[in-house]
Image 1 (spheres, one colour):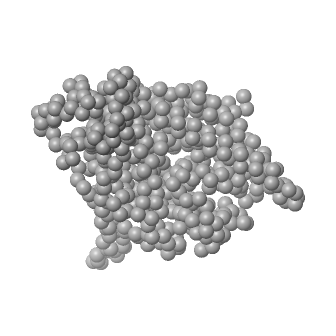
Image 2: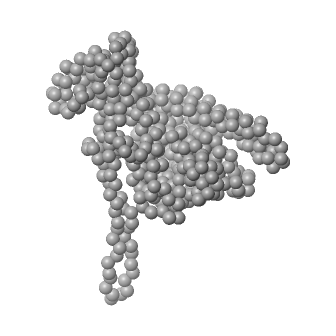
Image 3: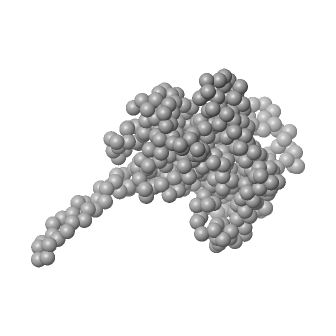
Amino acid sequence: MKHLKWVVLAFMAIFAVSAYAIAPDVAPHAMLGLSDPSLLTGMAAFPFMVGNTDIKAVADLVQKQGEAWDEFKKTNDDLLKAKADGKAVADLEAKLARINTDMDEQRKSMEDLAKKANRPGATGDESGQSSPEYKKAFDKFVRKGDDSDLRALQAKAMQTGSDPDGGYTVLPEMDRTIDRVAPTISAMFRLANNVTIGTAQYQKLVKTSGLSMRRVDDGSTGGETTNPKYAKLIIDVHTAEVEPWVYNETLEDSFVNLESDLAMEAAIGFSEGLGAEFITGNGVGKARGIAAYDMVANASYAWGKVGYIATGKSAAFASVAPSDKVIDLQHSLKAQYRPGAVFLTNDATLGKMRQLKDGSGSYYLWQPDPAAAFGGRFLGHPVEIDDNIADIGAGSLSLAFGNFRRAYTIVNRAGTTLIRDNLTAKGTTKFNFRRRVGGGITHYEALKWLKFSTG
């Protein structure tokens, strides 16, 4: 019963988000009688909760996390005492590493549940918006390569869904599966602003400075105030492709839910590839990632660059008061961006963060929180995990803090196309899914990094 509160919170969150699927006009936090929606902020990390959720599995994972965290704190306290007493610590360090690994595995188990529940049909809607006639024609194209009915339907509807290489626009439910699964695999898909366009380029004007006020004496003539300044941001979309291969015998098996399998393969492939670009991509023929911009010490921040706080020690948190620099990172973000801001890091760095205490050494700054996914909370803000972020090393950018909805925009060109190829490899058929996607920072002030360096 010791960890009952975590199980109760998990069930409350599951109920709220599941009920929201039925009554979308009522906010999930309101259904629970909560006045603060931020108490359920992290539930976006659990999109499976509106599908066929294995509630017992979720509750078990939450309870195990609570048990592991208690064991982690006890072991780390023993480790700190042993170091202070000059005793051997190898066994305690190995035990702490094992507990960290167990907690990371629990998070991955939660992601696996999310993927399973997000398969097509998991929400009880297999049909989507496509007509039975179109669905039948698409299935005929996928299984047999016969596109005559599909071409006729698209011509009748005056669609321009086929591309010059002979591809066809996929079924709407396949497209939605890709969009639905992506947030369970890539944190950036979940955190960033997502827009859909019908052109090859996304353009946005961002105000970099506002109007200034001035006082005017009675009877005096006022002058001109400072004009606002704007920056024009452009994000190009580029073609990305995923290509599952299927044995021809499988295509002939009518009992195989081919559309479901292909949609999941495409969703996972796009999510993993694009998720990496949103962190480290160089912007040449691909998205530009949050770690690929010019970095500058936050005291010298200027628009067009990303500010960072240095830990004061190369390849590590500071030896003395290591959490102070993380607090500095948190407050380097302007107050207007902090509501909704999260920490973004990888599993290895989170393992180090779990060991950090307050200045008195009495309280751990990281805490588990079922409503903030399995990254928990650090200094009150949710921690999101993305293993595309660099491990701690000399001069590494290994911990970001920002309001990613404000800071980063993912741009999708409407529609996913599919090209079928049964000629390249004998006995198999290739299904080439293509999407046009881009991404980039659209508000530099809303993102900061912790740099593991002396300055």
